[in-house]
Length: 318
Image 1 (tube, one colour):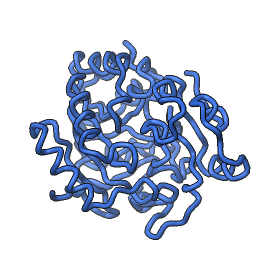
Image 2 (image 1 turned 135 degrees about the horizontal axis):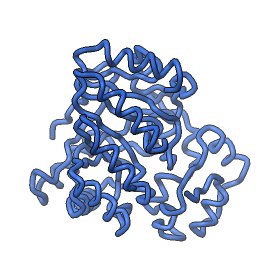
Image 3 (image 1 turned 90 degrees about the vertical axis):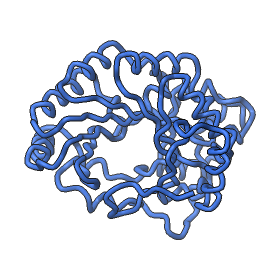
């Protein structure tokens, strides 16, 4: 997959002048640029405020220190009972199966995550699977990362088989941005291992703006749905990207055209380097009231925030 990995290349690709290289290098050094060319092609050239560009372009604002923002905003280090395992919520656990993502979103809550301590290979994989097997309350395992679809289908299929051998696990959820940023990843082999396991598969994709979902993405999403895989979408409410009722409405309608259910609209996790994306809670509530006024209930995502130590995501009342 052709990928842009240098800030200067990204700015040139979208016909914009880059900031001074010395300062930009500091940002890039903290969290490297990574943008598939298929995603970059959807960015409107010459517009620094393009909502797709804002998600991936490094900004000097990332160097600013903001009160309440940290490198571990969800206290995930305290929720890891075994290597590569996060067990924060009742009846479900998350496996960090890879550090690799196809795209580096600048607001990513795991942009500072210590992936080196969470490798799911060899002995660590066995410890993670042993934890899942020993925790009989678990019903669902979530594959995350990084992005789990960065791994080869053969490896993912083998992992699914290991999980399916644990009797109390009944669902397998995959959290991924791959079908949105590089829809060719939705291959026959991907669908085969997802649908051939005993476990009930669920895929949760991540799109924040309707323009991310072009024709090729729509075909990929529909292919998953037509294979019997429920597909849900999680978004993050981001300043300048989707902080308007019209943009949220357009995203929900576009998702539904593809057979995807709007699921969660997350308030920004307070991760260091992303404070410039924040939409205050009061403003978010007002936006959702506007969205509810123009969409049927099944197209309105649930506005939520995640709090360290909470046993579930917290719904934000509107």
